[in-house]
Length: 456
Image 1 (cartoon, rainbow, N blue to C red):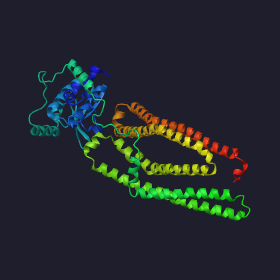
Image 2 (image 1 turned 180 degrees about the vertical axis):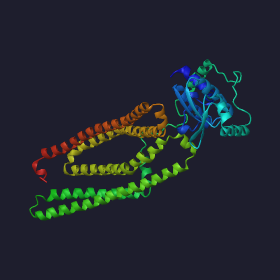
Image 3 (image 1 turned 135 degrees about the horizontal axis):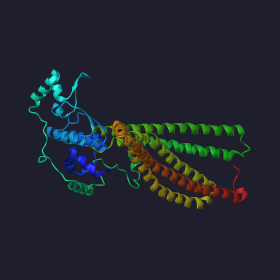
Image 4 (image 1 turned 90 degrees about the vertical axis):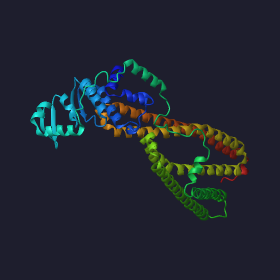
């Protein structure tokens, strides 16, 4: 940051007045594609960028097309004639008023150079050029090129500019200016997200059927194990019958499991289709101000990675959770029937598991939410980099944008890594608790009198 050159650039590009009008001066946030700047302001910001680079050669393609006549004259005098007086300038323009000031003029028609000479020489030798100049004079009126006197200029001292920027800097809000901060839920939201998900397209019906099939599957597993355990030592039952009944129960439970899996897929598909339709309707019916204040990357993140989670992760995770809970109840019930003494250990351990779950959830939910909100920053930066690739290459800023992309990926990956670590932390403790329950059951079987149980 060269402050003196920065202030000179602002004056040369007639941006001082604009910065005074902007709510936070040069710290004002600009939306995607310069949505809150006028065409003239965009053009002057581009000119300022080029001037601040202090290059040797300047290629200007009609830089006064979007500004009014007075500003164009001011820009020409201060920017082209003064600031770039020692530079090589190639200016493309249709405004013939400015041509007398140039060393050389090329008259181009249909992609070919017809004539090339200084202005007055070209005017006296080329009929096409005379026609062009006369036509312009008839349309535009009197000659517009005039040197703005010092009295007419808006002179702003460097102290005034510094003072105004210091004030704006202190005023600049750290919160939302134009781009709204991405919102995320805080704390435990209870059953609200599950209710919202199941309210889509017969969700509760599919959920009920799935639970019913899973409960039947668990009962089938218990029956299968009980049949084998109860009859393995029965001398009156043939081995063939024992195996056939065991296999039939097993095949029945597999069929039930297949139906349950199909219903989970149907639930996921129906709910996801419904949510996607609502999302699409919301996006198409949003006011234009929503697109001004919402980065494209955030919208892309919602309709791609977030929707992928709704498509695949949510339905299967929901039923893994429900299925695991049913399995826990069934296993504890089985242990309680065979060795009721294990309840002295299992009940406190279930209580400890709930405490662990509460402690883990408070962290894991926030980490996943942070991971979700930081993901849109990555896609937004990528979309902006692709859209502005020409400008980035022109100013040789590829390295800066590449490093920024890596930083955003690190920021996004960090909560995901910590969530993975929290998951491992929970698994280790839950497995320790599970081992304690199973060990207690095994000790109960071994320590009780030998006649209490059969080997099965």
